[in-house]
Amino acid sequence: MKIRTRLTFWYAAILIVSLIVIGIGTYQEISEQLSHEHRKKIWKHALDETSEMILWVGLPAVILGLLGGWWITRKALAPVTKLASAVEKIHDRNLRAQLPRTGNGDELDRLTEVFNDMTVRLDDSFQRIREFTLHASHELKTPLTVMRGELEMSLRQENLALAEKERLLSQIDEIERLAKIVDGLTLLTKADAGQIKLDFEPVRLDELVRESFADTKILAQPLNIKVNLSACEEVAISGDRHRLRQLLLNLTDNAVKYNQHDGLIDISLRRLAGFAELKITNTGAGVTPEVQARVFERFYRGDASHNHLIEGCGLGLSIAEWIVAAHDGTIQFVSEMNKLTSVTVKFKFS
Image (cartoon, rainbow, N blue to C red; front, side, top):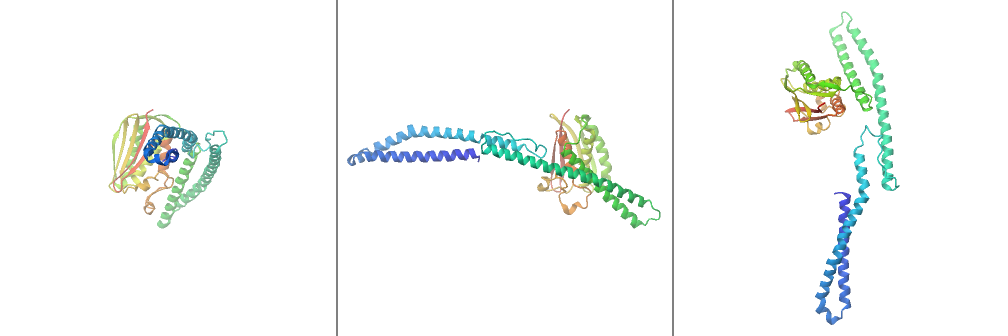
């Protein structure tokens, strides 16, 4: 219940109680002014007079008081409603946006000033975190490149024992995984800071889907997963071709990795009313509703007890979400345990 409604109810209760007290007091006053011998005869008349006064004078006063109290409460709380609406629009990418102040120096104006100071401090903190992540990612790239080069040189040695060769290959795989994590972090951090410029142009999304379909069939072969392209209607949107290819790669790669042997992947692209719908569905273990709510969080990979069996770093869906948002689209993740998992992306037509 809103504060405005509660205040109105409280105000109405006070007015009604006041009216009852006035009525009782008026009746008693009239009764006391009458002589004792006439009280029994005209007590009914006094009660009628009191009721009439309450009906014709008190009730209109109560109604007027309620309307006036409601109007005053509404006007007094209007700045609170406006402030709440403005605060709801604040997120990590527009923390520098200032909330509107009334300028009258009251408590709400002071609260708005405190909110503005707080968002500035938060923006500074986020900015320092982004700068740290970018610098750390940049510094990590060089040693990782050097380490990989040295390991590859070691692999070229003659008469290398099989066990030693497997150990070196395992280390190279781990370095590649670290490099992917660094690249993903760098991309997302630059995206948060608005440092990535997308090259928008007319893109035939159906062509990219067919290319992705062919690549997915190759990725799915080791697990004997069947890949279907159930629909691929001609669709053109305005977008960055490279990022859209990256989006499709991330989504189809997840559909393969989190599938099962002899499973199924279905890809469809359809033209709907005013937008294009890309849907990728796969069989597999699925995830719980609690996990579904967090799948787009960075480094979140669901059931930690099984994730060591699946390659990845938990950034794929985060990157996919950013790409979709950068194209003014929407992305939805739906999963049923031990049944189907689907990701649905919608873009507006160009």
